[in-house]
Image (cartoon, rainbow, N blue to C red; front, side):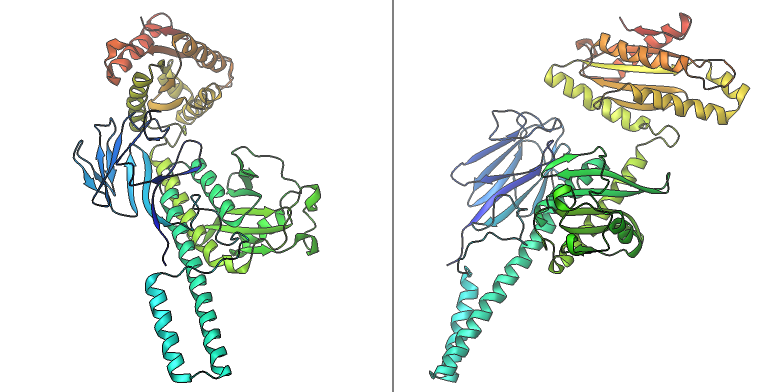
Length: 504
């Protein structure tokens, strides 16, 4: 008897974890949105409070956009609001910039899709065959019985063939599950637009699949001609900040993976005499280890280093085909994030481009209006910048722009967005900041710039800053908010420069 098939909606939310929601036909209509009143609540700010409706019709799901602010797409096609569309299995659904996907799973597949297929639960149960496979098995056994008779040897032969058939089916089930996991991982990774989000997600997923306790992402750093550890995972706790990993990971294994461009598996580090640069497991080292290369254009640009501190031989050769495909998906997605970042980043200052800032500001205004939160905008214009270029040359002018960009970043919170608006003019979007909070940040930026010796002749570089806070009079229009901040900046110029003024 075949097992029941269940319908699931899956997505990665702001907590960087995979979420799966069972869709039961008994609930005829299912709403998806950012409100706690929605049947499926998500926390992405580009999702409307009541964004999408799923409804059962003749055993199939239909999806309807409920007039959302940022729209809904099915496999790249935008939905017309209030017009239902049939939902097909393994379809990607995009709500604003949040990607979800609709899939089917059988009863024996855990709701957490990424509970590893390499370490199945320690339970003994007979293999459940589909009706098609079972019919084939019955016919095969009948033919064997008919041709070989009933003597003891032939009966044993038929039993052995039946056992081998079950083992073959079980192995195929595991391979199919691996492919489904890889398919879902590919869905997730290809929706990540930042390298930090991508690497955290990649680390989290492969750690779950391989039952790893800890993990590290190590990328090649061309500026220091060495390696940089960017992401660490310790028993499920993900961090983007580098920690001291001396003795925790083997630099020899990392170096070998970079040089040889192949997956390295260490069954038991305590029995490997060559790994003398790693601590014993009880002192912080790993017992079993796998190192996976991330490759772009035949060059290893990074590795994923996983370990298990208690269990020897946690990683095995049978995992290599899976890991090879996983690494390829991660490498391609990582390359895409690099291309995306390059497209939205100013080459000189490493701040966002004007186009990206325009889009981010429209999104920030919409979000502030919906949440009834403060939003401020800061426009910064370097004083007498033309004179700097004329007197000291454009190389010095470029250095001023780069150092000023660093100063801006020194005084921003994680949610603030800074960009180069053109020439010597910069802009900072400050979500959840009122005018006074924005003024405090602006003054710190202005003072640090004036005190920094950039021109090397005692002459200071100064900046004039204008601040505007979003109000109802702006009517959701970013241009009106920009005009207010710009006018405040010009008032600062006319008042003698090197000051900050808040728009009325």
